[in-house]
Amino acid sequence: DQFYVVMKDFTQRFMDGHVSMTLNFDIFFEQVGGSMGLILQELSDGRILVVDVWQDLPADRAGIEVGAEILEWGGMTAADYLAQVYSPFGPYSTDHHLRRDQLVFMERSPMGTILEVKYRQPNGSVKTVELQSEFDFYETLLAAMPIFQSDDLEPPVVTHSIEGVGYIKIN
Image (cartoon, rainbow, N blue to C red; front, side):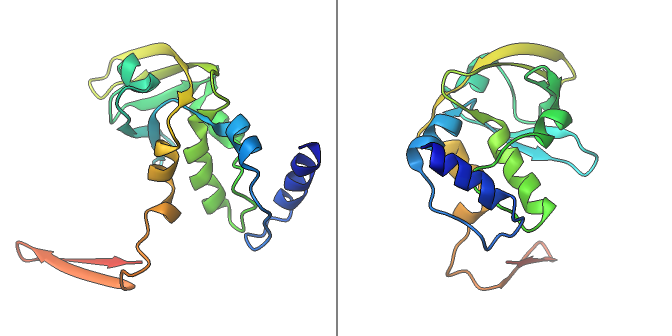
């Protein structure tokens, strides 16, 4: 296991998405098997919002709502915490892809991890709660990762119109 950890760290330093190694699922589970039950999105102004809350997981039980802004996570500002999040799916060729996966893994941790989270609900009220991560069968991970949401059979350009307005999706 220690050899795997050293080699994974070594490959992460290449900053090249073409360099990779086999994922050790036991270590992956140890590192990020727990979930708080959130899917997060960063806005262009740096705010981090909750875009989905999974029913019956810690965030839902704590009352965090879709649209809430994460202000602090684990005793740090949300932005500072996000910047130090480790993604086991690297290495990454671009900062954009790294940041996207850091958002996915921000809410994941070893099972049983307790973090204090401060957030602003959509109605403006600010709350602080303690969340303890638990196993979610990787549901939030799979839902949040763009690679698991793609349809290989979808054409590269999809168009449709609604009430006279044309929409174009480029894959």
